Image 1 (cartoon, helix red, strand yellow):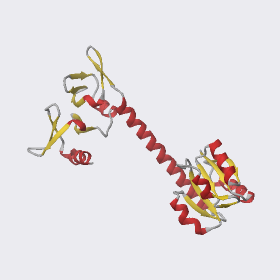
Image 2 (cartoon, helix red, strand yellow):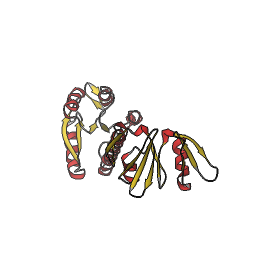
Image 3 (tube, helix red, strand yellow):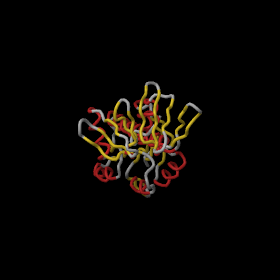
Length: 242
């Protein structure tokens, strides 16, 4: 559900929008309404909505005055107004949409869908960022013959598949883990570790050079040479250049 507030000085306009949303946008939950900038500011602080339907011209302030009270603006905004000439200014304030009164139902539904898409995209970005942070932050547990080795991703130079086992190489040690290389590929940050070949996962920070002689190979910081498959060569170069 999208939590929404409606800010409009006309009660008739507020009530009409509430009815339209209930009928055509069931994924919107109206959690509060207000008629002035001061009311709206207090309402938004207390309810923390995802979306604000905002009128432009109101007594004792405008919708733009309300937006200026927040830095950054912690909600999505759809302007609903009878005045077309504010559209350019609204765009400059990064509003999701700008709807003119009287409201067109199709335009309202479309605007709400834009908000949903924006929220979903933002949630995914946050999830990806959190996931990458978790992957790169702590040590990983490597089950080895005599117990468990705890390795920080930065110290891992490369991983090499050996059937259902994986050899993990650091600057001064080699560990043989009882997990396949795909499990480590899923575990490690994909912006730092690259599957250069079906048998090799390399830490891009430990790549010293790339060779095109008799195939494609990278020289790692421990002096080892790892083949880069032909079909993955362009992806590798793109990451290294990016």
